[in-house]
Length: 383
Ligand code: ADP
Ligand code: MG
Image (cartoon, rainbow, N blue to C red; front, top):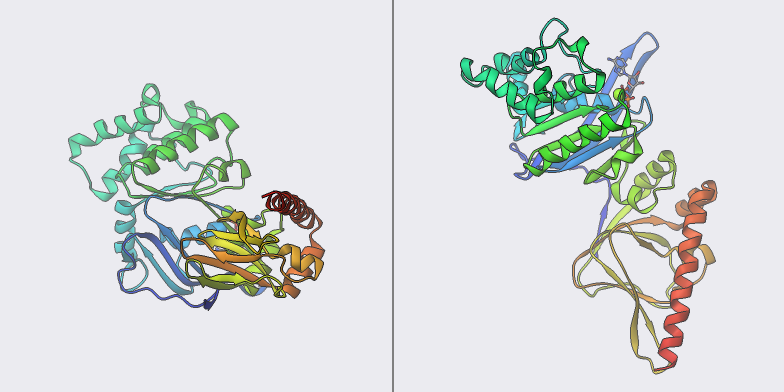
């Protein structure tokens, strides 16, 4: 078994890892205002890989937009490093170099479109090509028209933004964001101001970009959209919640998820290695990050049989913690490496006592598992 603290500091080599599109390391952002200094981002470590479709959620004021601004180079971190598409975007680079880099590498979409009102949709889409000086001058209108066609706005190409609906303005803003064919699209509540049909159209477009291999990162406050992304990242009070915690216990309040994130430890087990032995007392709540675990019982003839296989996003140890008892089964790693995120008993009990809906959800699982054990016992007895 390998033990590592969950929040070990991470380092990046100069160019970052090859599959990472975004690497944030130790990001701290402080603002100073009349009331004094306050920290909005409190040491964020986050990696987003190429080709991922990622949603970011969190309460209003939790720091989502500030976090996106660190990735786009719109604002700069107080401390820490940001590597995007292989480039450290704050070290040894001037503001004008950064702006040029952004034009070629990044598409940005905001909640309120920000189209230039005196330009037609076509001209708005051509603008980033002019700024970045990409594509031949004569080619730009044709390319802009292709992008407007892609988003279904070819008929409106020569109209001013005010003459189309808000949904259509956002589609035009997306066409503009993709003007220079960037590998990364970053969107801050792109559907926040739209009806559900327009929102759906935008998510479909994003899914299409992801299919082409692009990376899409979208802040949203619409929980129905998070089910359509590969990964959902929760920001709580300027910190990132561990994704295994949020996947395993989705009913918890963000503040409780954050508490678990802070007290969690990480353990890894080789294939077949025992995680809990039968009759051993259980001191942790175990959540599965990767791999599969086998829950094993023995029949009267002392023959082993597997009662259940648990995988990513599932958990175990809750029965023993809630009953205060010893383990009724052996739990071991399946045929692959298993990585677990574990919570000490006292922390688990305190949070569960404060979160009745989580207690209820866990209670249902306990009931289901007891049923499974009983059925398995009966089957074993009849063999
Ligand atoms: P979210 O997008 O999650 O709603 P933000 O990232 O916009 O949250 O803001 C997080 C916190 O940082 C808020 O308390 C906000 O008032 C503060 N904040 C954001 N930008 C600035 C700024 N430029 N100056 C001072 N405070 C700011
Ligand atoms: Mg915001």
